[in-house]
Image (cartoon, rainbow over all chains, first blue to last red; front, side, top):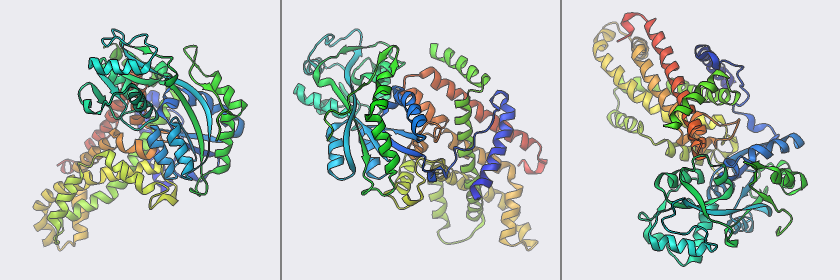
Length: 291
Length: 235
């Protein structure tokens, strides 16, 4: 009641403003207000920035909503934060890309089961001038140890995201511990993939990015892909329904419908059909390695 | 430089076509920030008045605390409100996280100290002139508060504008408690943050220009209201 009264006065104030702003005046859509939480027709998905920033969700979610009537609300944060939020029961479905922490999430009883959805790959991007001389290397470990040996700037996500964890594993593979160099050539941004690419572009540094965010990224400046194609750059996305037992607030039925759709023929076709600049960004691979 | 030119062109185009997505996020921004402002004013102005004319133990400590809270970092407020509203938190059952209501709560917490602290200073100064007279008329403290609030209304309008500026401009709190969900909790500042992270700097800047225009419009509106007030209130 209180909300409606307040909201009406606010709407009034807005209309006044809209009149002043002239061209901005338009029908006010007031149904985005609070209280929508009670409607059963939506689910909350905790996901990663790469799926959102690459435009994938914008392309495929309307298809799911059209087929099922279920609205999908996406909170796009790093994989680490997404998992933490889902552990707090602040989400119905988890859709991220760090297999080890996904499996731990399920093993701990926080999620029902994990299913593969799709994959793409990571790439090492850096200044096209390539001062470290890694361009064209087929061995990502060699590329990283060369960056370290030449002391060229490398920007790490530093945020426990799926990409950050993949990067940390690659340093282990390369036999380099970058931590002592933190603040010198190894720079931890503590930010999302896009923000980290902006930083790398600004300081002519190397970084590891998922290919989807890279392709969709608009501020490439002098950056280019220098290393790709190594099997160790594989990037698998998985989906998990948050356990209704652990979290009674979970909209299990609608959430399961989303998981089934993503891993079923319709969702897989939607993922395969998403193109950016004529290129496919994600490759569906559900049904293999489900546990 | 290219981004600047592109941004101006984009901003004009967004406004001229009344881009539906833009209208949606602008109206949500205004709904959230103005509602937070109204709630913060309803609590903050009386609180400021009590601190201004009240004589009670701990008053000076309370004033220092309220003044200090003006510097609350939005991201900390966002985190605290998140922890409270999370399903795992004390108010999780309300299901408010990732709704505009959560964003209003966070911005109210941010704006309240600004309104209370600034209005306290204004009312205390005014009360120095009024105190004796109010006493001689035998006006009680409630009447005094009402008189002071009314007579200082023009200065207090500026206080409200400062609070509105804080609310409409912050991103740290709303992005945590709102989640920047498209068509649900996406506001101007979170949209700007998102476009920046997509590397879409021109669009991000264009949205920033629109946000500036809105702030200008709100302040122009306030100035017009102020002009229409009697001279005495424009202290």
